[in-house]
Amino acid sequence: MTDFYAGEKEYFPKIKKINYEGPKSDNPLAFKYYDAEKKVGKKKMKDHLRFAVAYWHSFCADGTDPFGSATHIHPWISGAKTPMDAASNKMDAAFEFITKLGAEFYAFHDRDMAPEGASPAESEKNLFTMTAKAKKLQKATGVKLLWGTANLFSNPRFMNGAATNPEFSVVALAATQVKAAIDATIELGGQGYTFWGGREGYMSLINTDLKKEKDNLARFLIMARDYARKQGFKGAFYIEPKPMEPSKHQYDFDTETVIGFLRYYGLDNDFRLNIEANHAELAGHDFVHELETAAAAGLFGSVDANRGDTMNGWDTDQFPISYYETALAMNAILKAGGFTTGGLNFDAKIRRNSVDLSDLFIAHIGGMDAFAIGLEIANRIASDGVIPNFIKKRYASFSAGDGAKFAKGELDLEQLAKIGTDAGYGNTGITSGKQEYLENVLNGYLLGL
Ligand code: XUL
Ligand code: CO
Image (cartoon, rainbow, N blue to C red; front, side, top):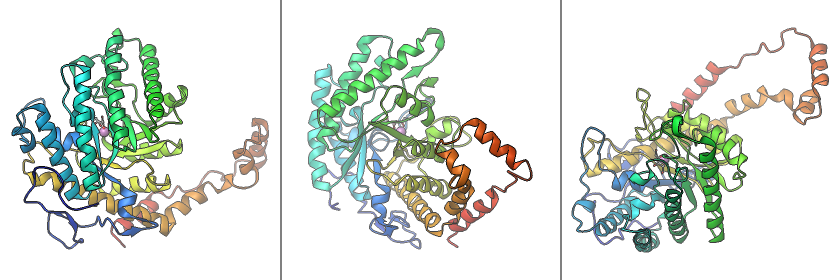
């Protein structure tokens, strides 16, 4: 990583490289806990956390909501003469921001990087022009691509779905975007390719052939996988579950649903899960539940780091700040072996009334510090051993004797029932789960005791 600015124009001239200054610093533009080079366990913080900046929220979203117009007037867009000029300026701003922040990765949708043209061919040309520029900026700054994706939800043509659209011609147009976005991802050395299906669901079952739509979605994913592999893509494909919004019901409802889908259609060798904290909440789960569920299936891939608002039922995409949540998340991620192709992508946006350019830096700094603390606590959980050892002991009866035979599938139901009959009732099963004790242990780590 270099810390020089490599674009053609500078958009954050008052902000210099963000440095680690330690917990006592009161500089809002400094890290208090994220110390990229610091070793935690066997790896450096930056290699554990693999932070990525989301192009769409940080450089495209303008604060528009259903009740009001734009509040973020981005200088990289407002001064541009043409949509391609805006795209080029936006990319300068993006690489300046990511470099000054010291994140190692970014993630993009095709339409974040380059505007749609008058035809699929022109859209592709726009994307490849911007891909060439991104490649130069990646080389100059050392910033890498975590994953690419195609926006198959904003354009009105996707109002009835993309791969699940009842009209074949829309499915084919979705393919033009996915093919080009895969090409761009490969060209940029992307480590993953993500599918988030915001319109891959239904608004009502009264007009929907659910089986056909799911079959078509799987067919489309198989085609995308085969194309990417043929082009030499070695990275991971991710499905990002979300239960609803914008559709009433999305087929990638939650992690467990996606695991079933991937296995049913034979996609589980190539696809893994990209888990988003706020999406987990919308599905009625904890973030950590989704992480542990993916890991249990051997399908954990990457994370869209953010948080929701427990009082709201929609995707508020706020920056993560809860140490408790980041600690449990990092504990799950470390237990799963850590990131390989994946990372922590801030799929988060500053609030509509956060109108200072510095707010974008401050928000990311807070999120990175929160995950750095989470990592330290997760490492403490592992090294201290109280919690993992308790869990190990809790299941110890499956490691020896009849319990081990059961686990290996060496007993049938009659043999199992006989063991139960011989043991009798007694006090069997009356064992404390020690939840409160373990919660207090965790709180102790959070206070650094
Ligand atoms: C939408 C969402 C998307 C995906 C990428 O809720 O999370 O931004 O991460 O398409
Ligand atoms: Co996301």
